[in-house]
Image 1 (cartoon, rainbow, N blue to C red):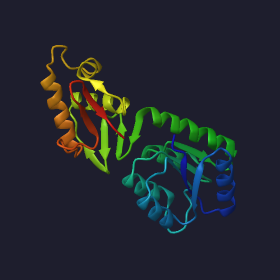
Image 2: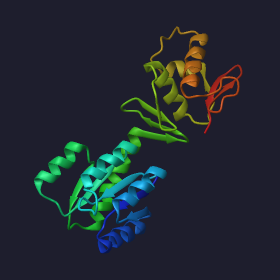
Image 3: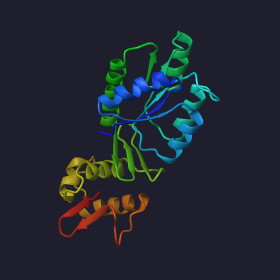
Length: 221
């Protein structure tokens, strides 16, 4: 599980406390006091798995920063703020924050909430190379571009991804999807061809979905 945390906190003492505590629990924590610096880093490096965000920041309100981060990438965000009144909490949850911790709080509670959220996201989201997949919403993003699959294409794609680097026969693909049991091999091949086209995979020299002659296909990382 990716454990890279982006911490945006202008109280340097609090920032150091949280950062050191997270590192004790084997999180890779990158910290910023200035929201613009954090935004610049996030724009260049989207490898973070979660954001811990203060609301009272210089030059930019935390809620405005929240919206900008979400525009770049749909990433879980926990609000960590002294603005613990119900109005701010309601506004935060209406915007889509994943959790809201009112200061002061025990750092151990933050760790537990981070671990819970990452576990929850990991069951819904899969990251393989350039692909980001949300099984719950049937969303696939490759190199930051969304891919529109049909229901059957998505089922086949997910089956191949979940059997990464393994050979999957046409029969296995058939039984793992909602295809009609009498579906012919050439129909499965047609779906594979459509999937390759949509993810930018060259059918003559595929990078991702390899043909295994006489057997089926294999998705390689």
